[in-house]
Each structure stands twice: as structure tokens, then as C-alpha cells.
Image (cartoon, rainbow, N blue to C red; front, side):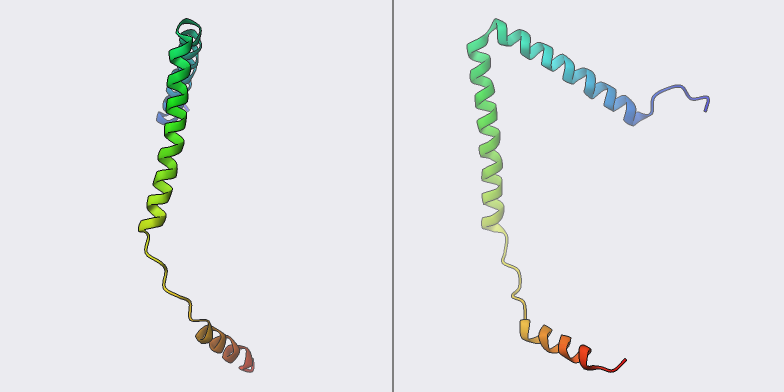
Length: 87
């Protein structure tokens, strides 16, 4: 237990935390300094991200092949055969 340094995961977590707090402070400062353009860019990025996710979902649904149909008769027959077997 002589190692007082942070592990790699803890170091990455601390860096993400510091970068996030710095990003919040920069965003708030720029919001008061350049309000109109910051709000326009924020709306553009938010709407763009939602539309990109919707496009990705649509593309995935359109290009994914259909699964093989289930053979319900075969599964019902095998289920009834196993339940009729004595134990």
C-alpha cells in the first residue's frame, strides 16, 4: 500500500471531471459574452445530434435483414413430446 498515486482509471476520471467543470465555466462565460451565437450553436448541435441518432436508427432498421421465421409447429411438437415422456 505504498503507492499513493492515483490509478490510471482514477486519473482519467479526475481529468474528465476537471475538463467538464472547465467546459461549464467557459460555456457560462461565453453565454453572457456572446449570447445569441452561443444559443444558436447550442440549438444547432442539440438538434443535429438528435437527427443524426434518428438517421442512424432508421438506417439500421432499413438495412438489417429480417430474422428467420420461427417454426412454431416444430417447437410445439417437440415440447409436447418431451412433456409426455415419463420421468
